Image (cartoon, rainbow, N blue to C red; front, side, top):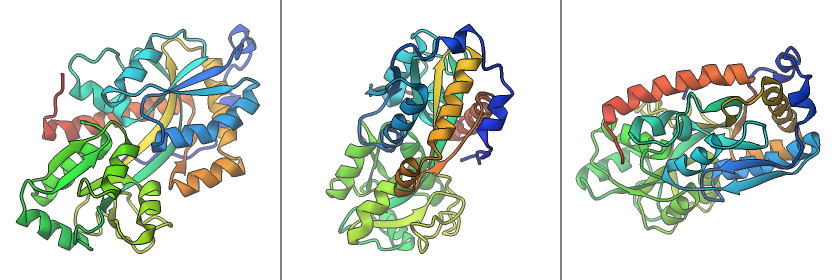
Length: 322
């Protein structure tokens, strides 16, 4: 996962033209944020944490609408066709704006030409977690178990081509494992299946994984971040374990192509202010999500880098979907 520069957005946004008809008329109605995954996943939790603070600043309700399907493509396509006035936004991540174009030849939207970057607001590491009773308390034991049973150890993800899927494929390639993929329609059902013992392991967002592992039954074996995380100080990183798998995701807001720059800047500044509130910070800490602030221009540069990175990953894995 590329490192996202954490700069103060307000100073940068203040240099943009924040006056004029576009900004004066925004927002005229509730702002709708499409979350293109099921409720209960990390993206949904973080966006719902931010929404009240954004609403207070904007003077209009911020309404969250879940439109799941096709690794986030269903909801993302909807926003690409929406009016470019700031009242409809997409919560995007690596899947919607970097991975999907590389694995869906017939994708119904263009992530570069049909969207306006607004801001990235969070980055979250994944951890490798195993089901209760698997009998692998360490990474070494897990690798040995998987090698003894090629093709029989199952791993969950929140969709084919999702970051959770690709992270595990990367681990399997590095460790020379043969694992069986079981995709779900979202992070929440995938995590529920793992905790219930229906699948053996997965790369899961660190917050939900840490909460699930508190009773000691599911086991967290490694962290996909570059450094250990405060909530799991005794858990080594994948790199420390000799498997340098980067497993994380980012979350941000984009509007349709043609979104006026003053509107994008105001939304970005509103998000940055929301990230400062105590309630939002508490929820982010609980979910092991790192707050991030970016200008629209910075997000655009980051998206280009992220697309290049995932392009190199997917060339090795050769995943293509209809």
